[in-house]
Length: 416
Image 1 (tube, helix red, strand yellow):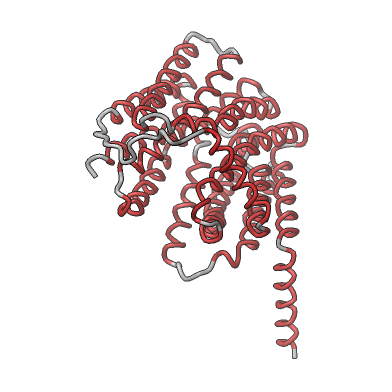
Image 2 (cartoon, rainbow, N blue to C red):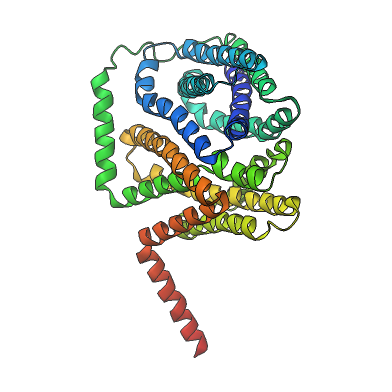
């Protein structure tokens, strides 16, 4: 614990900083551009380089000590935030500076995430990995819980440059803590790793996904979900709450906090009801998840004549429910992959899943941004989630048909 505690402390600081920017940055870009379509285009441009470089980053990181890469990544993020804060203080709001800043932050954040995961494995004995992964999960959730609210509060009162300055301070502190890690690597070098093996691993993983029908079905469902609804934080939620209802940016972070509360409650629910086989209800949970988002969209459409805070209160309730159901979907989905994908190819499978998901999210943000700009964020939210429900019904039409027939048979027997 003496060694891993430094990584935990550093991770708490960097995770807290990393949770602030995705909430505040869209607000600043929307305020600067006054356009959801331009906002969507901005985040598509800035996210794509880090996504495309992720496979190469993984190969590059393996050649160096993970502590050094982690320290370098955090320190670079601190420097980037410091420079951007100074530019903003002097009124340099040029689009080119913001784009470059966002691209570099995304790249080095991804590098930090990859290197810290491997560093975690190096610091923890194999027999204690499960124990410390549990601790890491708790700390990660606690670290990001209050970040959105604090970020939007600081942004609303002091401005975007002050938010970036806080991020710089947090990253500096995280880098200092990493320097204290007394690392003795367990794997003593990576000289045997060659670039060709990386390509081959992805080909094998792709072949497995393509040939296993059940795996392919869930894989495509995740891609559809990411394309149609992963843009909520960047486009839909700001478009509804800020642009349509003109709610103060200082309270917008409550949306993420409400979602996090739902996530925590769902985790507790799953832990206390471990005998429930959630995987058997995955199609219903998928549909229920999208129905909640459809309700948020309809609430925005029909409550426009009411006080904005009436809608916002209802939106927060739905966000708690959404966070709760999302985890009920994610946990059995992950468990299904872990049980069905052979252990010897699980790492490349999850790498390909992560790469594909990250690649499709910017495209979904771009699509949603332009559609929301044309017909409204709430109407777009409704349409996107109806499409998700249609896709889920198509993917599970056999299971849904069997369930519907069983329901009719039960009703018929009861009537007799």
